[in-house]
Length: 216
Ligand SMILES: *Cc1c(COP(=O)(O)O)cnc(C)c1O
Image (cartoon, rainbow, N blue to C red):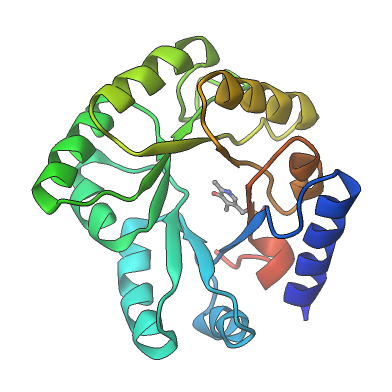
């Protein structure tokens, strides 16, 4: 199945770029995919998934976790501040920390709950006006502010502009993570995950290449 194929390509890219075997995690992006496709990947033994929408994930993952046991689910889509509470309860990691108001809300909720998902700061490396994410020039200060709130910031995430070579964007994100001491890099999707691995990705987010096209 496509799953085995993607895993094989991922392992080959690790080897080709001098990355230790198993150092890159495959996030299977299951947003708007039919349950049967998701179940097939769970049956194959995969236990790390990505979702874009809080409500969709709430409707899907409690039941899958009942059936398949512990499954790690990461939020990779934008998070509205008013959905922060259910997001904190449901997800093991949030890849889209992108503004101060959200950082403050998560910090308060995390204190109440006594736990917090791992956080990635989303950086708008292409400086696209319509895209979420901290501007590269503001990233260092934002990461410092999030840490000052005691938030567990472990990495950086980006979505390069669709019509550009992603490699410079991956390299830029890697530099931002490096100088801020962030060990994890969430970058690379179906079309470019091998390039992202070449630039140090620790988490690649692969949807359509794994599950098939999304029928919206
Ligand atoms: C949908 C989505 C993906 C997966 O995209 P594919 O091109 O289907 O692999 C990865 N990252 C984010 C943030 C997404 O929204």
